[in-house]
Length: 154
Image 1 (cartoon, one colour):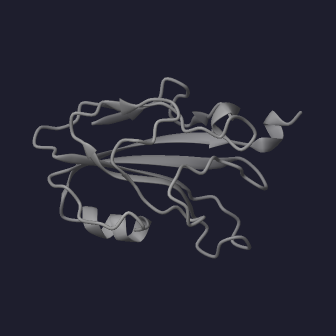
Image 2: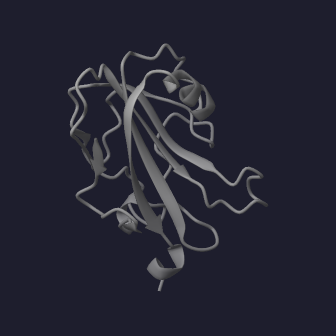
Image 3: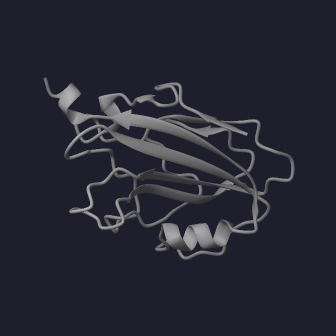
């Protein structure tokens, strides 16, 4: 399975359009080579580079979606109407754009191919989602985008 974006390459900068410095919309994503037997997909976008003085665990969950139909081959720019959107670190049920306060951060998108639907409340967070996908993951793929506000505010 592969996860790609037509807007940025793996381990490359995300366009400012998808950040707090731009339109604050989610980037387009392509889901490729989804394995046979997949019933649903789940997506997590997280920043593992948060300063510890902001968050002791150093992670910010930007976007969670599960029960995406298996036939879905991607998400269009700004699309959030597929599947169930879960609770991000901010406590809202939507996409939170990258807005690193200090330096370049990585934004890790992880797509899970699952053998079942997930029975989670829409207010569930990442820990609930990770617990639910355990034992149901057929395969997963990752895409990493980077962003540094300083290089975009010159």
